[in-house]
Length: 115
Image (cartoon, rainbow, N blue to C red; front, side, top):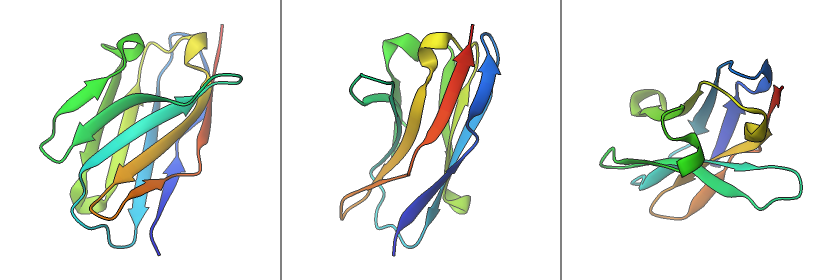
């Protein structure tokens, strides 16, 4: 059975930082991409950051220069370092891993940024 375990969310003041982690459990076959999504209340889920098997990263414009996606394949972990957080970053954050078989989602972790 394959699943992702997330950690690292919480409450932080504007301007603060948080790091999210997502640990893969099980055997994933030929990982293609690892990504972080978020969903704010009343809004659609959006991709925040992604990293390919070739280590190419991409970010939504609203987080460029503030968020960094990274991974440790030996530990089966993907991270999202978030700095200079803003109230509009408040959302439930999900990690997603895509391998040869399909997509796998974490259960989500709440990030709340107070003004």
